Image (cartoon, rainbow, N blue to C red; front, side, top):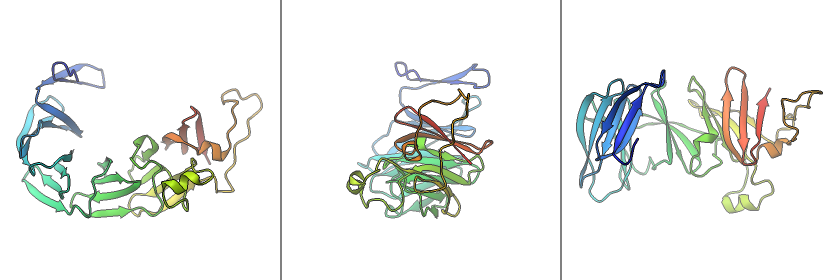
Length: 271
C-alpha cells in the first residue's frame, strides 16, 4: 500500500509481476480470503460500504452496505469465503451470508470480542483467542470446541507462539504451566513464573494430546557430539529453554518443534 496516494498494489507471488492497483482514498481496510478480497470503506453514521473483489484481476463481484448501530464502535469486520462476521461494542456477533443476506446472531454474552482470529479454511471453522483462552466456532454461530488444558502464555494473543498443522486438526501453543497461580500477581511471585509449556491439543475434541514441560522427568538435553560445530556452545536446561518463548514453529516432516526466546536463542525439540 502507498498511504500518500491511497493506492493498494497487487503482485503475483509466483513471479512478482505487478497485476493491478486499487486506488480509493475512502478505503479503510482490505481483508483477504481465498480467491476474493473484502474492501472496507470509511464508516458512515449507521452503515459501512463494502465491496468484494476478485483477487485474480480486481474486478468487482459484489457491492453492498452493512447496517450498523449508531454510536457503537466497530470491534471487527472479517471475511471468510461467503460469510461476513461483524461485531460492534456491546452488540451481538452477526454472521451474514453475502450471497443471500442470511443472518445469524450470537449473543454478546456467549461471544466475547477476541484479540485475534485464525480461520480454518479446510474445516470451515474459525478459532478465537480471548484472555488466554482458545475456542473453535462454526459459521452457524455454534461453539464447537473449548480446550481443557490450553491456557495461552500471552493474555493478548501472540500468533507467533501458535502453530496450526496442515490438516488443521492440531494446535500447538506456548502456554502457562497447569496448576500455576490463580492470577498474574500470583504467577509473578512464584519461582519460575517466566517458564511456560508447549501444549499440543486436538482442535475437534479440545483434549491436550502432548506437552513439553520442565515438569516432565523424561525430557533431557541431547549431549553435544564430539566435533559437532553445527550447534551453539551455549547450553540451556529444559527450564531455561521454556522461558520467554517468543516464536514457535513445527516441522511436520521432521516431527520437530523449533522455539525462539527473548535471549535470541533457538531450541529444537525432537523425540
